[in-house]
Amino acid sequence: MKIALSGKKKFYTFAYQCYLMEDEMDNKRMESLKGMFFMAMPELNDPNFHQTVTCICQHTSEGAVGLVVNRVHPYLVGKDIFKALNIKCCQEIESLPIHVGGPVHNSEIFVLHGYPFDWEGCYMITDGFAMSNSMSMLRAIANGEGPESFIVLLGCAGWSAGQIETEIKNNVWLFSSMCKDILFDIPVERRWRELLKKIGVDPVLLTSTAGHS
Image (cartoon, rainbow, N blue to C red; front, side, top):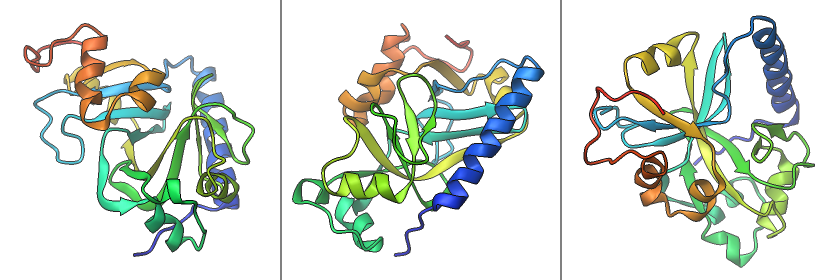
């Protein structure tokens, strides 16, 4: 198994590109979906996204990047990830669930987390959520000294320019603001249904003709 860490230089390049993209977005007065939860409509049968909840980490005229937050890797846990990175981890982290963040860059590690936000390479998504993947963050998590709330993911999801807007028009997704309880308190297998209920949608009655919240 080969696990890749994006690395300090690569992550800063990504963050800087996101900054430039945000600036371009502001100049064009685009509406950004950054910081939203996307819930797949039941008819979305793509195995990568069926009944998923995805956090949109970045959305500009160039496209979008997200992290699926309700899929757990079938066999990898914390000790496997940290062993691959040659990082010793404490016993409580050995069984840490590893989420499948999406089909893109599926050997790269991402950490979606809450407070505090003073970690090296921390990229803010909203006032209450950030994404990081620095070695200092991973070492802290391995030692049981990471952020107050977090999930570790392998891979991410990506959309090309205009793709996510087209999918919304085609009723592929419902969306809602990110919320801490869904991300960190609700069990993975219940996140999709609980988030739908939170926005007033009954999953049983949901059809592809529904609009967005």
